[in-house]
Length: 435
Ligand SMILES: [Zn+2]
Image 1 (cartoon, rainbow, N blue to C red):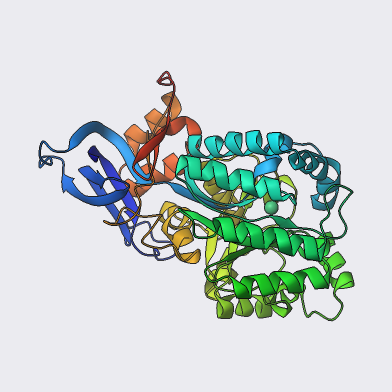
Image 2: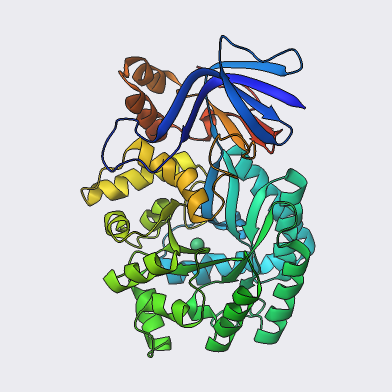
């Protein structure tokens, strides 16, 4: 199938310089055809030079066509506890999250939960995600199956938790290793699936389990590692008690061989210079979760310090600690969190972190997060302005950054018209919103 879509094409070709609203590193091609041959992007043509009759042509003039967003840290089972009142991280886990996660031991619940979750990601414009299921093997299996059915690039893996978790949510070292190895055998590198070794966080794994996780990572070329680090001060103090020999929370992971150039560490709010140097040296990166950090009152992530140390930063919703699967809302919160520290992020920097920057940090550059020929056609069509306020603002915008910054700040999933994954339409807005 050869398909050409006429729209305003936008992608980020290189990391934009900090603070500049000039579109350096940003490729904006107004009124162009994006050519998709099968699952992959084949190229682009100016609007007045349509491809030949062997191409199916679809006209979305006036809409923005972008790579699908990449959400580098989100929890499938936590849709059930999104927007839960009144708790900091450790209370929130015990009061809301763990009971919800226990239900995913049931294969029917896991299967229905995975389908709901992935369809919701697509309906928010996210085409790739790095996902926490639960401790249950069946919950990871259900996610891999549901992603394969949708042709989605998905990185996930069974959560490792052998202590400090309630009954029904603990594994043990030998059982966890057997489950992980079976999942890796079946899913890692199959189609678009990739395995992530997934210790929940240092407190919920024994040193023996963390060591096992390090062995799994070493034995599995191309595997990712996902976990949490330095999210909340009480958590950081607890980790220091549990691992007195470690220099820092992050060092616990380093000591167990878990910091690789495919490691995704959520939060990283309470890090020091030595931690940042370690991240930069290993190529591990931070998933910045601004909505979750605000909602749980965890703290304000120091993006500028990370950038200055050479640490890559991607963007993540962290639902259910976060309050929306929308990466636009996540970016808008990211802007506000950084504004508190006097660090003004441009729309370009935000969009880079949620598309190409994330792809680079995940070692998937050229495959996702861009509109380059050869990349997978994981793309979204957006209305820049929905509703009278946004439309008025858009009509008054004088240049591209102003328009797109307003889109990032005011937009959400209601702006999304269509989502395509591997050249197949997987989401279409049911009805046009009233303008
Ligand atoms: Zn999380």
